[in-house]
Image (cartoon, one colour):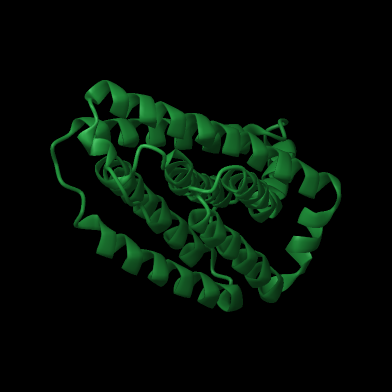
Length: 235
């Protein structure tokens, strides 16, 4: 994913400057994801996604993964990389928009505030991401061993999620979401450290895409957990 001179060869000040650029791009991606979700909800796309069933979700996820792959491939191409990152961010908002629509409805019905669970999930994700990423930049521990574990865990989570489309178990859904939150916590540690060790100085867009994805996936599953807990976790 990353090549050339590594950020690890730069001074500590330059490394922190690199990370600041990464986090700024991440912040921009989160804003665009919010725009993507809002547009999807306002135009009725999110509601259509709720009605589309497994095949509709798989098509959207396939498109999302395809754009992520393309954005990584063009991360060093000026202008194209910016456009690809922006499209990926907007598409991420589309992917999570049906869940956000459900959260808005449940929040309005149970808490008197449509954004209640969204704000909670975002706050928890931001605190977790900030703490984990900061720790990864300061510790001498080597997190490279996590790569294989995270990959296997993600494959298992995808398989279980597909199975749960058919059995529709809220208990299994909660277990999957909890597991994915733990996987993303490990991924944030691993990716932050890996970026500092192997990313080239001009690799901030590719690095932002990786960490943005970790943040977005963690947010979606924390939100899912909060909604399932609010409903009592009943099948």
